[in-house]
Length: 174
Length: 197
Image (cartoon, rainbow over all chains, first blue to last red; front, side, top):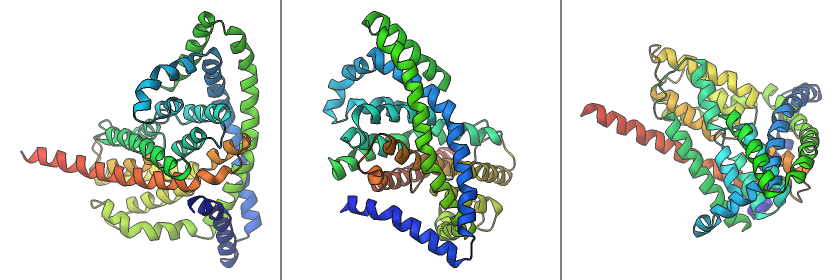
């Protein structure tokens, strides 16, 4: 049932936007192309960030060090039913957006996008943002020195997001 | 921080490979993975062009403002220290709507404007105000309806249903947002209670 909704969601959002744009007399195709150009730039500008991260993670993976680390933490995590393969993503997600995107790519490539871990990693990546980056950018831009409880709240919510993803993916796809 | 992660992964990998006898694999993977990254970005172009194109239509049609108006009554409660018609509230709402549509590039400058207005409201003090902490609590959770990049990566690695994770992502986001807001309230009242004592 839930999976069915996912199939309908995107085509319906697309249809709604196209119809609403037409109704509001927006030059739809022209605007689509205009926005699309931004998408090209965005993807290209992502390349050096992503390439650097993916190479670095691939070295760690190919050396066998990542597997050794995963095996090391497996006994502890299995008590809580947490797949150890997910830990590198959980560790990098709050710190760096591109690093976690690189880790996600590595997990999806190794485990497969439709595996349980692949779906879990996809959900985790999508359901939270890079806490440290956001705090640095926003507080830095306006010159705030004392962050208050923002860091604590951000990191604890990340943890809850990870646990929530785990439970939801178990319920939906497990 | 990101520098240490980046260098750390590569250096640990190479050193481990020397002792593990996997240096040959490592050597091979360096250029292979660089190549992979290029193909991944090319496949991301398709998703990003389509989505950002569509979002431009939504923007022009005034859907972002509609969304902002829809959330306004909720946000005036979440931010009790900001007057409902203050420019800070406008920027907070536009930042939230842009984030929801996955327009991160558009959302950041709006968010910075929101922070500037909130700083003015707080008498230009160099410390974070209550509203700022709440605003960033919402932002760090990252409320997005369609995780475009993730869908793009899943497509590149031949997922049978790349968008299957959309519903699970939305549910997880709702839960962590609710938690972040509760936590924000909890810390605020705890701090306030301490100051009274």
